[in-house]
Image 1 (cartoon, one colour):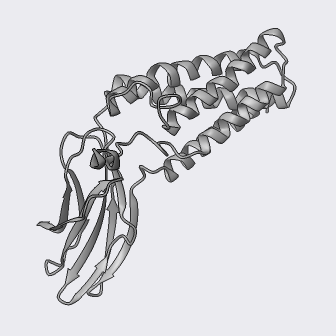
Image 2: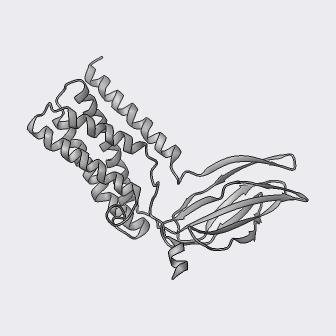
Image 3: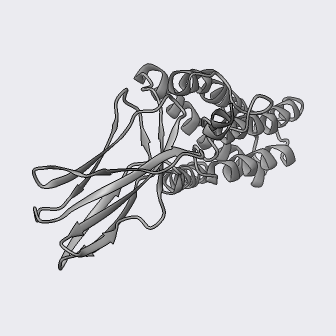
Length: 266
């Protein structure tokens, strides 16, 4: 098989594995698990993000109608006291509704199931959920596709540098897709979801925005170097490694949030 085909396969596999990893580890990934109560195994899936203009519904399937429960919640981070409400039964489900917060507002919640004198805490550690506004597909889809393409071309450029191939075209496609995905459509997505165009340095600590900025700086330098020498290796390899490491940092980690503690103090 042609080595260029092998290099592209390697780049695609590495890119897909990194994307799967970030999807499986991020702070927006639902918390899943099982608990035992009254000789019944209850499976749960507790959401950690919600993008509709309404209260966030959390459902736990418990077909035994003798099982009841309650949930408690408060804004996060805050000095609020816990509010406690009974779970509502809707057919075979026990349902909690986390009151809606503004975009970037977070709440933490915990669920307890009961049957007679028996009770069990579903999630020992409270789950943190973040609210956001819906992002239209015309903005979100190209953002995702361009960022995927940037990672793919970056990996291919890194492999080219490693095996002493020309890196100019791969570097050009990487910087182009990174600009489109991260610096054009990225802020648009951020604006729709949380109301601000940019919340990274120097305006905030949003790690997603900061990751984009660091990736761009590395690849801007690499592209400047490779324009002078289409076989340039060191900066291309460094930028590819940097982008790969950055992709392994869970998406939305240290993302936009409202600090309710500051509002409590006002």
